[in-house]
Image 1 (cartoon, rainbow, N blue to C red):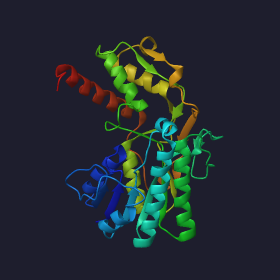
Image 2: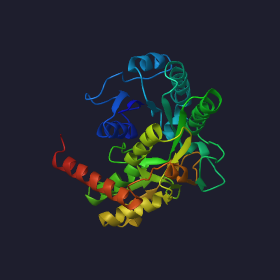
Image 3: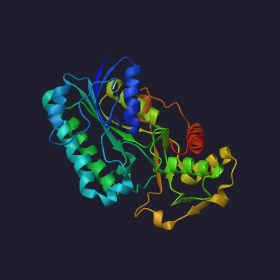
Length: 313
C-alpha cells in the first residue's frame, strides 16, 4: 500500500486519481475539495502553506501535483494569478518535498501547451518547449523546475505531460463538453444552434480516467523522468461535432455556427502526443476517441432529459 498526496483533488483528473488509489488499496490524502472518506488536509494550497501541509501529511511514497489554474482562455485575463498558482506554488511544493521527504516521487501535471506552435504535429518528451499562452508559459516554467530538481538536485521528480482529458466530470464550458452538451440540447429541442469558435484545430483527446491511471502509474511504477500522456491520435473539433451529430441523428451543418470572436489570440493548429515512452514503461490507455464521444453524448442526453423533466430541481 502506498501513501499518496494528491493536490487538486477536486478537479476532473484529481477526482479519478483519488478513486483509483482507493480501488487499488492505497491510501490517498487530498488537498482540494474532496470526499469525506479520505483524510482532509485542506482545500487551499499556496506557497505559504505548502511546507506545513506536507508536514501534516506525514511520510509519503508519492506526491501527485495536479492543482493549477488550468484554463488557457482564463490565463489571458489573469496572468499574474496563473503564474502564482502554476509556478510559485509548484516551486514551494518542490522545496518542501526536497526538505522533508526526498525519497517520495514527485509527479507534476505538465501540459501539451508547453509545446506551443511546434514545428511537428506530433510531440514527444524531447520536443522543444515554445509556449504561446500565459498558461503554456506558466506550465513550461513549472515543468523546467521539476526537470532541474531531478537532474541537478537528485529529487525523484517527474513531469507527466497531459494532453486533453475529457470525461463526464469535465465542466461543460470546456469545448469537448460544450460540443456534446450543446448538440444534445439541439437534439432535445432545448436550443436551435450551437455557436463555436475555431473547429479546425486538432487535439489529442483521452478519457480523464486514463490520464489519472497514467499519473498513478508514473508515481508508483515508473522511473522518474518526463512522460507524454496521450492517446497518440489527433482529432479536430469538427470531428467531435460530426461524430456527436451522427450519434444524435442531427445535421450539424444546419445547427453549428462559427463565431470568429471566440477564436483565441494564438490558436495552436495541432497538438498530438507521442506516448511511446509511457507505453514502454508499461502503461496503455483503455478508452478510444469514438467511445469517448459516445460516452459524453449519452451522459449529456441523460442529464438534460432530467433537467427537462424537473426544471426547478
